[in-house]
Structures are given as C-alpha cells and as structure tokens.
Length: 514
Image 1 (tube, rainbow, N blue to C red):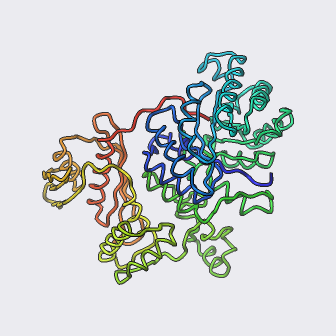
Image 2 (cartoon, helix red, strand yellow):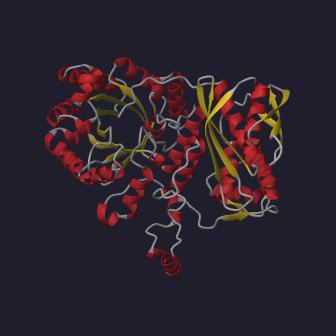
Image 3 (tube, rainbow, N blue to C red):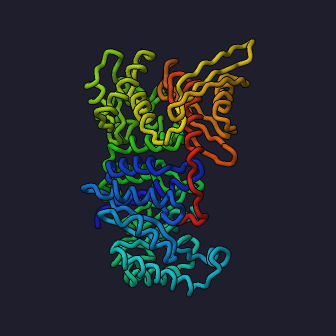
C-alpha cells in the first residue's frame, strides 16, 4: 500500500492528558472537524473508563461515524472480555467500527503492573482478539511498551494475535524511549521475523518524551509501517504524542524523499489546531512547527528581503496549504449578514438561521468596538458561541470599579433558571473582585489554579481570550471566555468553569493505553 493510514487519537490518548479533558459535545465537535480533515481512523475514546467516555464514544459513532465517507470509528479496550464488550456497545453504530485492544508485553510491566507470566499475557491477547473478531472484522492489537519488550517474545505475541484475527498490529513506543535509528531497525525486524505480518497493517504509536515522536513515526514509515497514530497539536500523555500536522506535512512537503502520502485534506489542519486549542484552553507555543503563530512569520531583514522577492527562499510550505489565510483583515462594521456568512464559510463555519443571527449580532457588537476585524476575531467569536456547556448560570451584568488609590470592587448579576441574582465583591484587583462577586452570588467558593490571558489579534482593541482552571471543593474544571474587555472575558471564563463544576465529569480508570 503506497499510502499511510492516519489514525487520530486526539479524542482518546490526547484527551487523557491533564488539562485536555473534553465533554461529549466537545468531542463531537472535534470529531466532525477530524472527519472534515479526512483522517482514516478516529479513536473516539476508552469506553469502559467512565460512563461519560462510553457516551462520548457512542455518540461519535452514531453522529459522525454514520455519515457518508465517514472515518473508521475506533474504541480502546484492555484485553479483558468485559472491556471488549463495552467497547463494542459504543462503536457498533458506526458504518466502519473498530475495536482496539492492548496489553503490555515488556517484562517491566509484566512484573510490576500486571503480575502475570509471559504465557498468561500471550493467552489473554489471543482470547481478546478472538472475542473482538466475533463482533467485527476490524480489530487492532497493541503490545504496550513495545520499545522495551523482549523482541522475540513480542514477535511471538504479534504472530499469535494475527493468527487469531487481528487486522492491524500497532507497535507503541509507550514511554517515548526509542531513538529513530533503533526504532526503524525494530520495525524492519518485525517485518522480517513475524511470518504472517503481511496479513495485517503494521502501525506505530510514538510518544514524545525525548522529543522523537515525529522522527520515530517517519522512520517507521520508511521501514514499512503503513499506519501512524498521532494527535492534533501533538497532545497526549506526559510530553504528548506524535503530531499529526507535522507527520502529514512532512510526507507532503518531502514526497520527493518519502514517495508516499496521506488522504488528509491539509487545508483543514489549521482550523483543527485552533479548534482544539479553543476547546481545551491550551494553546500551542508560537514556534510550534506547521501551526504555531510564528510558523510563517519572518522578522530577520535578510529573511524578509528574500520572502518579498520569492516566498520559496524561506517558506517550504504555503500558509494556504494548511488552511491559513495570508490576508488577515476580513470585514468592518458596514459589512452585512451575507458577507459574514460567506467569510465564515471560507473559514469552515457553515452557519444559518438562528446560529447565523447570533453570530452576526456578536460580529456587529465587535465591529463597533474595533477598527479592524480579523479572521482570528471571527473564529474566536463563533467558537465562543459553540462552546457546549450546560449553562446553569449566565452572566447578565458586570460593573467594576478599580484604580490606584481605591479597593477594587465588582457587582455581578447572574441568571439561573429564569431568576436573576446579584451581589458584589472586593479583591486585590478587578479580576479578583469580579470572581469573588460570582462566588458571593452562587455560594460556591472557587480556588483559581491557573489563569491565562491571550490576545487573539494585535492592537489595543484585540479580543482577549481567557482560560482558567478552578478547584470547586475538590472538583477541578477548566473554563474559557472571550471579550474585548479582559475583565468580562475573565468573568465569562469563570462562569463557564462554574457550569462545568455543576455537572462534573466522571473519573476515569488508571489504565491509559498505548
């Protein structure tokens, strides 16, 4: 096969990382974007880990996996038969369901975590694959911690699970231990040693603990792997996973070297990156390859001179290749509804009816406050409206008094179930005062663990996007809010977190997967 299968695990491995958890509606929104990105496989979750993860995986299978041309929808399970049963109950609604089962094969894991013998683990792996094959024809198996597993034993397990019906065998560098040269050699040796390897797709899942995840994924492709497991923005456990955008654009940009490509619609990459950042409240560093703010920026005089004469001098990709517009200015206060709808469609948001009316009102309000409205501003206001959290409380009114010689104070009015509640608070600064006023209204005391303020665009009138992490009596949640007024954005982010705390996410089991 002269094409690499892109297996996206943003919603499973990526979502398990601290600070990246998503509710069902957020997973659905991200899954729809992954479908537009045209990835081959979406690993939607770990169904047995919690009721909410089961529901999220099931809804991705139902609402995204049933669409025309939809990706394969995959669920993760350990080798326990109950895990596999639960996984199938979640993914069975998709047109093309997949069960991905795993068990550790390294002696470190066998001795200290599983406390089982090699023979016991091999039998459990075979039984699991056979059980999964009774449900569906598409079954993937992973020997967890493959980079530290005894090679001969691991190959025995792989050979046995292929005989049992596994159609994909995925080799995980679970702890990011491998170095590219040895990893490439290991993949090549697996192809030589496992006699029935031609009956399954060979896959890799690389972590980034030593910063080698993308390099290891690419060298695996060079040595015969034809599926790579990766995530948007490289999110994931600890230091993260291999970055989807870096792998895809490496294969596309250097097709002369690799001679292989993907079916990913690269023009959707930037939107996927920004959507994930908005949902999680965690933004990529400016110098992040492909999708960072500085990825196509040039400050050095020599570079600027070269780019002005010919972009190819210092740009090996075009911004448009990943869906990033080089024209930042969009519209102003005189622009109409149809112009807004057309521009939003260009940016990937097809709004109509009430949704368009709401977006148009927010756009007009913003245009009255700003001299220039940019694409990033439009993305921010639309995605702010698309943040799916059950709103127990909504912010109706905010008034803040602050200065160098007075104690900052704030008055807040919140609505709840048709009733309006108002109270005041004081604090060290206007943001602290506003949050204390919200606590006074709700009677819930939140402890701010993290606060991040980010300007969406340049200029004094830029939209401020605030992300917070708050502890409400042991329930830790995140929240997001945006406004040209950073105090208002802070209050909206805090209320957003408060609404999440009122509807807490179930705890997950400790087993995290490949």
